[in-house]
Image 1 (spheres, rainbow, N blue to C red):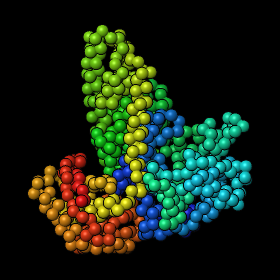
Image 2: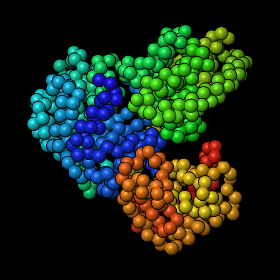
Image 3: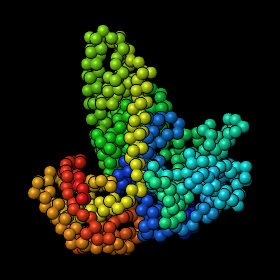
Image 4: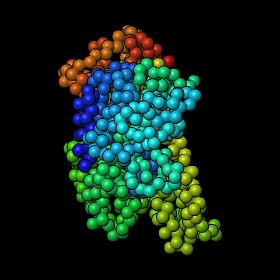
Length: 583
């Protein structure tokens, strides 16, 4: 069964069970400072999991484009992916465990044709925060899973929360038995031997965790996630996702073009190319900070491995075309934006080639310093700096060092690199501080303030101003907007004064639901128009601001306090950035 068939079956099945199909959010999140990318299907739905009304109702289903960056350096093995698609269905205070489990079982066995004997499930064992999930246990027995294939595990395995704080709850997970022999008599779905592969996760989200512990949410929710690539791989009987139709044409193309036969490098090129295209398509561009740095890292790692394969980089456009052709049935937007995607990737490749040349020159300096000091082994920090600053692979440093009678302590380098990875992971984890649901009082105020700032900038600078992104925490707001020049002090002061004028008038913030076409006819703005369904939520503030938005917002502008611009600077070409506070 192909990926497009599984996706369509999934959406149709849940639509037939009363769910409204909603569009995928972009991989670049809007108004969410907690992550660099959209990492899970629930992420764009957090306000609704917390109780806000969704314009499409209480039963939703979609496919969500996701990017996770913690394991970039693991890509190249037989399973890790940076970009993946997550199929999901949600109950926002509607059905709960019994109906969720019954639908999951029906979809797996009836729609996908997975035999009952291939399925095992896990449930939450219970602790001081939440009781043993006997409801899920009984529901699985009623569905047809025998008791000996229902397992209970603790929070490490069967509790889901994004980060340290946010909506959470016990989950039940479904596993596919690959048919491999058990690694031991105790082998079960928690074992990593490969016999059992997790295919679906239903989270029964009824708690909220903060620094004080757990409390009950306003409503009981169900949040599910099924990884498309993994399911395709299993149903097609493949060993790795790189053998399914989404990757196979690119992998075959690389075999035809390569001079060196390196399976790991082929996987890295195919995976990083796909991930980069999805990020670029949703507005990402290479840079030295945040998600732009991740995109740059993906493209440069891809380029390095094209070099390792001995592939002439002038054929990169052909490789991009092959990848887009393999993906366009799932993502027609890639086909529509083919030339722009090519242009961004090729420009970054050209820039990196120059960087590699600079790295070679820097290596000569390092080698000379080493020799002049009477050493035979190049300092490990210098090797790491060549990699981190110049994108110079340590293997290349080792090879060049050998030509000059020098050595690289690769074990010491790997140790330093592991420390760097751990720091990076910790830094990435920090992005989850406050969870994906930082929608407290101050975040709500700042969210509303972005609307006022957007409106004020249009008055001061002109109607060409449009929001290009925002980042909100409890301490400050960051707002990116289209404008080609640095703002003058006078323009900044006028903008600040106008926002404070809007605040002082204590104007009501009106929330409306209407058809998307009606909202656009009213002049409503939206950053990512395609992410909204047919029925949208619109927030109107006086006669100067009307935007499609998921919220949350204050009741009236007078609640915001005093607005102060702290900094105005360039963000990227044609985009400026304002950092501001409310006090």
